[in-house]
Length: 414
Image (cartoon, rainbow, N blue to C red):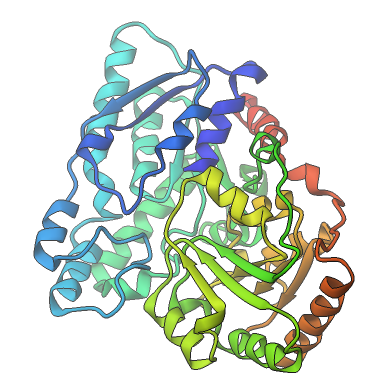
């Protein structure tokens, strides 16, 4: 959501007038809402909100559970009713349950065209990947220059295996994916690895069709710097974290580091959605008393939590095709100016960003020796200076305005 929001924020100043078509929040259902970010929409930008039809109200009644995140990160132990709901979601609602919005969005565009309005391009961003089918239909109707922005893989997205899809459903979903890749004028991804994955679906497509535009950070969000704590060595994780993140070995190394350095007040803090499996792993490592859990907070507060940390913790889910997972918070971590510890696969796109900016270190899930060494180095650095300096090398390339300038070039490409 922030990706599109920040584009919209900077596009008018770069000579592009956006019209935003989105869902009326009163008619849709989401796990969390952050209304504070509405302030980033520039005055004069037209935002049209439509109705929708979604099955999530029925899901809540059937399972008596909250609206799930995309990867079912907040579901924990799965009941029989939830398994039934997942099967229906994976085999009836294709590509996903948000497809009920498409007819409303298309109707809104048709009304604008009927009123004589003209548009030079259309940009659709997903997931939910059903949004790309709107772009596909608009391309067929009006022939507009179409940019399909895929923030995550489609048929290879990490939670696909939980949907219990039949062969027919897998075939149909792959067909939708292929149609979008073939018809779009530009396919945008957030990472090089995801771009290669999608390009491999239709090898005959020209490489020039694919562009990588990573997420980034907005300088305005970091105009008021906050100090790192002087009395605590605090590792902070911001965002959703599930059992798929394979954090157990790292937690055990943190606990061992605390034993080796009893004089150092070492603490962990998680801001956002934390799965029960993670809480259990923290307890098993003996870190419960050293861990603070903070519920979801608005974005501006999350930025403050990042800055009021000694170092920042990043996790990459231990799932297929995870080298291309490049979370948006990577770039906000860079802007926060704190060392970043990344737990994930070797050679990931996230690791390359950190290394290129000299902003931290990446460790494979089971590389305990490297974790041990780095944590000791972090303790030593903290004892010398609680505000551990981090070079700003290359960080500016990920500013939201600079990335929006690159988007403008793609919008104007013909």
